[in-house]
Image 1 (cartoon, rainbow, N blue to C red):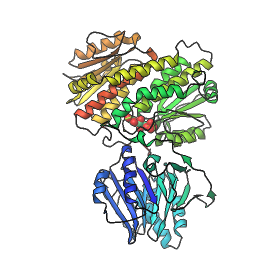
Image 2: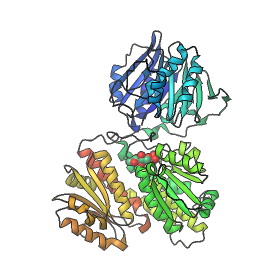
Image 3: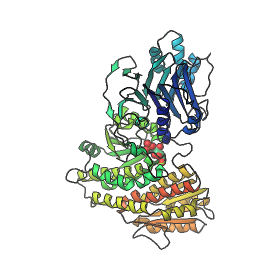
Image 4: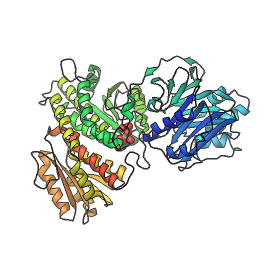
Length: 600
Ligand code: F6R
């Protein structure tokens, strides 16, 4: 989703801004721009399309030590050069980049800016015009900035340049992530630390409704009323090589291959000195006191939540409901007396989930966030956090974060079950070790999956994924992976449900990918496959050792029945990857999608 960078220092800012924007490309965007302070005012370069298109129009002759940049994922107004950021006020004195959504922008426009002619359809432009209006009315820039912020309803991360003051970047944030980074002779602004790791690993976190006055030698954080806030920097624990593709053609493939290593890291991270799995006792106690768990998440994380429900209900014997975040906040179901909320989010920034968390905290209920990003909004605002230890996930299509979510959820369920004195027969450390090995086997031998992708998915317009029990949930994830990166219309179904309507869509050659890893329903599922094959479907069965039939196309190594989703998803991730590749799609940056969805 949208990204912000800013630099103020003694060296040319252009390349640092462009490189920073390149690091944010993975989040998804449709246009990009930078603005730099020059001796002759602020120069804006912006373009629809990729950063490479922007690079091509940036005037190499312009030298500037201060600038801001932006990648835009359209919300208000189509993707276009006009709607791309930065936006300028009428006199071009002020230049602004903005992440987030201003809900009352039309109202503000009507109330204060009727005489202003606008260049874009964005909500952002009203912010920069308002600042200019208050300055024209006699306010100082700082006061005008602050006054504007008090009028905004919604989410924002902002960086502002003033043509008359090339020694300052004005920054503010509410509900959208934003960091200030520190250097010896410069300072930076970034919506994601990854963007500015090129120059610093020292960052200062900003809280909602804070303003920061950034110069090359100092940063001053203030509350909206002007009160100064002191905050120590933190070191971003990121390895720059984690965010490089290395020898891989795509981040997605690299991240699929990283899954065995991530699984082993998770085992280690959640083991105590005696080698026992352990979770913060406060979390376990809170879970034990709750009469029902509500898992809230979106997309792939929601699919992980569905599997997590099975883990928790089976191992810890606490009832669990799983809800789609965008529905829950505004359509809250009847809650139990002592609920615990678990937010699952790779990025920790998903606005739909955050809206639920705010609501849940207002109701006074405890919340745990399971996330890949320490210090993310959902992590900061929940009572507890469990980390995924998956390393940065750059490809838009989530892969290693999903299996990491399942790994952590299984440990949470196991440790809680043990703490409740339940008789859990499995040795989870050993079982997760077996999972890691099985993942490795699947990642080492991709040929058959590539072949299946070519045979089943090169030209089709649709595909179905079926399974029963846990396999159904994995099928949902397989379908989501396929549609988001290959644009094939794909749906996941419970095997037994097809005959209640959807089977009408089966035609000669319709690909049906069937998962058969659950002993209890293996024969039922195979019966469902027969039903679709009888109607012309081209079926591909992925089963598990011990349950396989002769014609099954992929036979997964044998793992514990409850944990099968951790490995059965791997061929589905690869299937989506190769299908996208064969169809010439941009695997890592699928159209219309953003990595971190920071608008509701
Ligand atoms: C799909 C995908 C999305 C995310 C969803 C939630 O591959 O990545 O469906 O899972 O946008 O994002 P997080 O997990 O960051 O809250």
